[in-house]
Length: 340
Image (cartoon, rainbow, N blue to C red; front, side, top):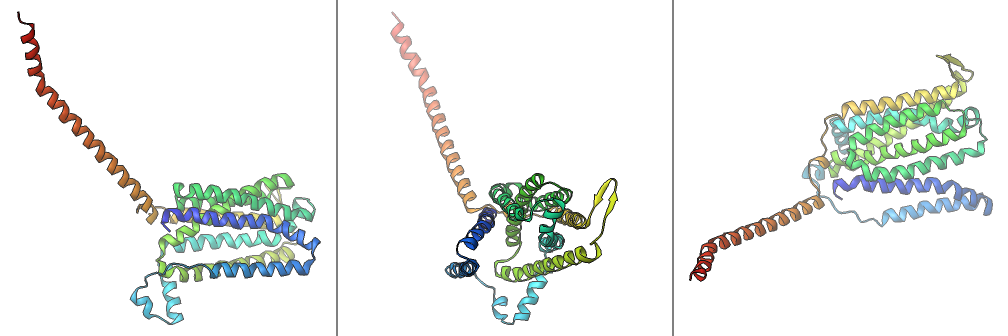
């Protein structure tokens, strides 16, 4: 797939994931009350079987592997080569550090989200699933918009702008005490976080050789999963012990345990976005320098049209010269007929 289409493809993937986020809770509730928990879990397990068969049916094109990579059959050597490549790549290291900051705070949202709904928003726990659907709806809209505009705006700019916007929205969300504003903020949060995913995938593919994509993913995904797990554990520990009875007032603003943790989360996300903004400044991607096959076809077509236009102009000029050359003879014949 050409580089300019990667953002659109990633956006479509995120669109499908977001649809599942919206449809899944409603379908699970329906199955739970209609057929029982056993059948609901069985159907959920079968969905993974379907996913496995779908992945198995994919026939990816074979890639040309360099001789050095082909000779290396040792796992530790290949893993070490992936680490060295990752550590030496400016874009990948920037993404790792910035997204690590984001996930260090994002785990708290997942761990304490239900308590925030009941304690801070003063809303029944039954609305927690509804708020998740609102977040998923925002993700659907974000996937459509990001797939259409990420390439035009620029992948690096889309990445850090979305992170900063997400951090600001988390800071706003931490101060809310009502359901309706929370719905609006969560919808916008789903929109911008999906834009981060749409930009991140093509960024990784753009700066990584095809034969090293698997090794890069093998480093990035486990690292982010580990950070998320630690974030969830830290948030749960702080809420249940250190900050259990925490209450403070700063500049007339009251802070409790959950909104304090969410505020720190927002600060971390904004910090990740600003770090990406500074470190990715001046980075030129292949998508910004190398035209795609469709762009080359359009340029060839424009060149052909220009050549045809030049030929027409030249033909008209030659015809005008011929007419001017015939003018004296025509005027002379007219003057002879006028003589008595």
